[in-house]
Length: 88
View 1 (cartoon, rainbow, N blue to C red):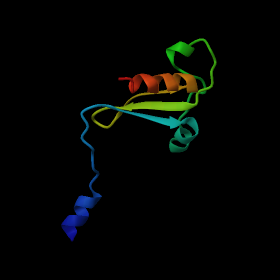
View 2: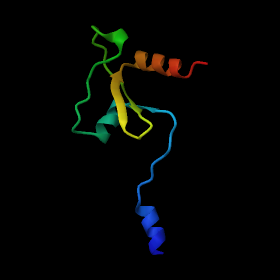
View 3: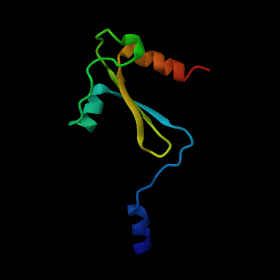
View 4: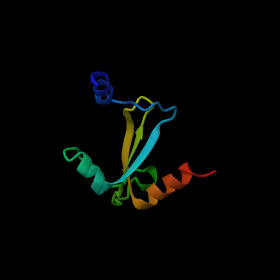
C-alpha cells in the first residue's frame, strides 16, 4: 500500500505535442487569480485605439505545461479567434 500511495501523491504531467489554448470568462479568471491585475479593455490588434470592454481571458499553455501567452479580448474578437482556430 505504501507504493500505491507514493504514486498517487506524485504530480502527473500530461504529455502534449501541441500548445493548449484556454478561454475563460473574465469573472472566472479573476476568481482563479484574485491578486493578478487583468486588463479591462480588449488587447486584440483590431481593437487598439478603441476602448472595448474585455469579456474573455485567453491563455496559451506550452508543451511543457507552462503559460506562454495570456491576453484579454472583447466578445467580437474572441468570436473571431475561435472561428479562425476551428476553420477548416
